View 1 (tube, rainbow, N blue to C red):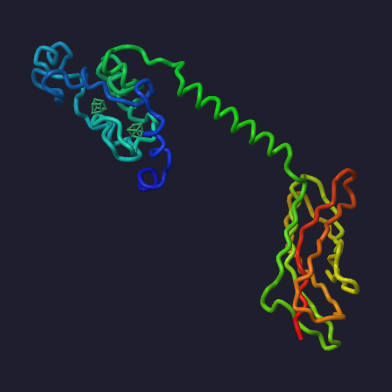
View 2: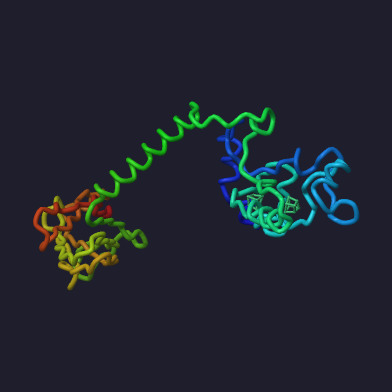
Length: 265
Ligand code: SF4
Ligand code: SF4
C-alpha cells in the first residue's frame, strides 16, 4: 500500500496523461447515490424499486470495494492519485450487484465526458495518436538496441591506491581491474593484449592472458603493466587494453582505453 501510494510513478503519470476521454475506474455516483445518497439495505430499502421511491441509490454501502482495494482508497470519492487501476473494486462491486440480482457496472470503466454528458469517450484523439507514436518509437528503439548489442563488453579501471608501486628492480608497476562480460549463449575464448604501451612496457595478466567465458558469464580480472622508465616524467601514458575473441570468427576485438602512470623524480 505504501509503495503504491508513495513510490509508484504510475500515479504521478496519471494526472499528466489523463483527459476528459480517458477511460478510468470510476463510481457511477448518479446511480449509486440517487438523490438522497447511499444506504444499507433493510426495512423499506430492500429492492431497487423501494430504494428508487425513497430516492436512495443502488450503493448498499457494504464497503466491499474499499476492502479489496490494495491502496486502501474509496473509489466512491472519485479518482485519487493512489489508484493503480487494478479494477479489483469493479469485480467486488459486480459480485455484490450479482448477488442482489441488480445490473452490474455501479463501479466500472468510464470517462469524465461520459459522466458529465452521457456521451461515449472518443478513442481516436491527438493524445492517443501521440502516445501510440511514442510507444512504437520506444519499442522500435528497444528492439534495435537488443538486436545491436555487443556480444561482450569490457571495462578497465586503473587501481588508484596506490596508483603505482616501484619494484625492487626499479621498475614501475600500475595495476588495473578488468571486467569482461559474455552476453552470448555460447562459450567465448578471449585473449588480452595491450596496444600503444610506452616502449619497453609489458602487460602481465598471469594465467589469465587468455580466458574462457561461459555463456553469460562475467569475470573480474587483475592486470598489471610494468615499465623500466627511461624518463620519470610524472605523466599518464595512454594505452588500450584489447580483448580479442579466439573462437568466434567475425566478432571484432574490443578495446578499452586506460593510462600508465610514471611518477616524477
Ligand atoms: S482500481 Fe484498484 S486501486 Fe483503484 S480504487 Fe479500484 S481497487 Fe483501488
Ligand atoms: S461494493 Fe458497490 S455497493 Fe458495495 S460499497 Fe462499493 S460501490 Fe457500494
